[in-house]
Amino acid sequence: MSSAFGVPRRAFRRVWRSRFARNVVVVASGTAGAQAITVAFAPLITRIYGPEAFGLLGTFMAIVTVAIPVAALAYPIAIVLPRDERDALGLVRLSAILSFGVALLAAAALWAGGDWLTATLGTEAVAGFLLLVPVAMLFAAWMQIAQQWLIRKKEFSVVARSAVAHSFVLNSAMSGIGWLHPLGAVLIVLATLGQALHAGLLFIGIRRRHRDQGSAAAREERPGLPLKELVYRYRDFPLYRAPQNFINAASQSLPVLMLAAFFGPAAAGFYTLGKMVMGMPSNLLGKAVTDVFYPRITEAAHNGENLPQHIVRATGVLLAIGIVPFGLVVLLGPWLFSVAFGSDWAIAGEYARWLALFFLFNFINKPSVAAVPVLGIQRGLLIYEMFSTGGKALGLFVGFYCFGSDLWAVALFSVIGVIAYSVMMLWILSHAMR
Image 1 (cartoon, rainbow, N blue to C red):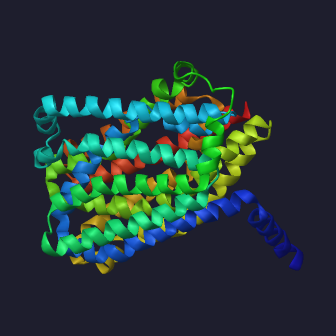
Image 2: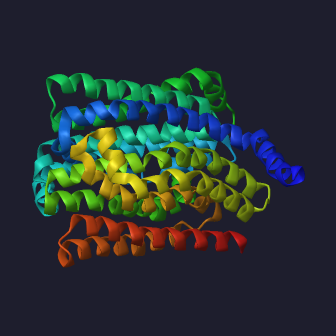
Image 3: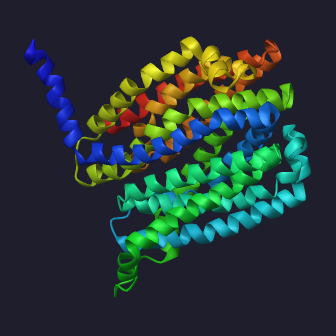
């Protein structure tokens, strides 16, 4: 009997002693702290603002989420990949330059066609806030640049501390200002400024940790590749990864936009809360695994290690962790949401029952997605994303037009998403094996 239990104990100790596990714990602890602060403030914030205000925030963030992937044409994701530090710094400069240009283009486009866009999407309620979208895009791009640089340098503690500080300041502001002005406009403005706050905290951490290293790299006699060469060498990121991220973000935002258009801001608010809560495990541990796994799988590829083994192990660990909390929401969603957020939010719990399935597979697919740039299959991921988003959009339309039910729409969206995630993980694993 003791030998039977000895094997898992030895395996656990071996995993815990690994640098990968320790780094995951560092990042997860910061994200956990940030999420704990959000959860602690959530019962207060949901009672201050109400479903309509959350619906406005959800609609605005749905538009921002779709726009962010093209903010720097996905070049920040490439910062981790170069062997040469000078080339990584060149990608930082390239990403910063592109973020300004894209934000200016977005501002011009929204100034000229913002009314048409909101009318087409049925989101006239947020028309007055559209010019905040390019501002949020710019700050989000800077945040991504800083995060990817810190991930490259494996300074995960800086990422963790910044996440906690950002969450505390943002939720405190939402609660404090909400007592005086419980409006959706307050949530939208604070969410935009929150992007700037997070980026600023990350850059402060970089300045403190890498003041000497960064200047030393810049003083090297041999310069890195010219920006033009970096644009060409990592062209698969704007060609394939940026469109893929854009389509993925659109698929995530579709339910909010369609619920707002067909059933009103309250339905969008219910979905926004359900998505926020169900996305917490993914934002907590899933993101931590991605941040640590990406440089690790890159290093493993450089060293000729067994990539499928790395992917399967990380996926299995996430499945073992996620099955219990997501399963509880499937069983007790409406009751849990009523107790935590008030009886007015029971419908959000019904949404969450289906979203729990969707986000479980979104949670466990993080190692597979992190391996895509290393495997060089970003074009294939773009093709997959097009079919996946089309399928999820079809599920939403069937729920709206055939059943006339917001709950059916969310359910079909979630089930099709589960199938799509499963196919994607098997495809990436088979490619890694080949």
